Length: 76
Image 1 (cartoon, rainbow, N blue to C red):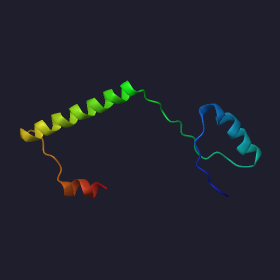
Image 2: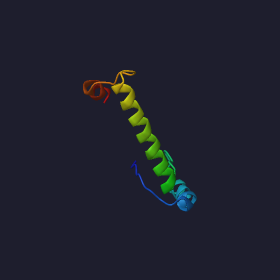
Image 3: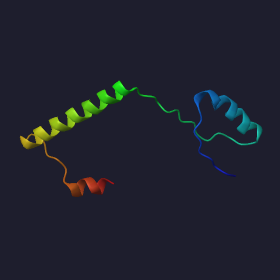
Image 4: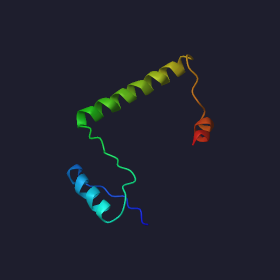
């Protein structure tokens, strides 16, 4: 058996699923990519940056303790 990973437009999903079944194969997983428009992506990036800056300010004020680089690397 061979496993393939492919990307196709949403409209071709049904046809490809039928073709795979006709060839005796099976669909293992289906992932649908979520589209984000530019403004949503920009808002998310800004929110993440604001959260990061707030954390740094809290750390500088001694209100929170940041992890050391060694602790961060150990998580990998």
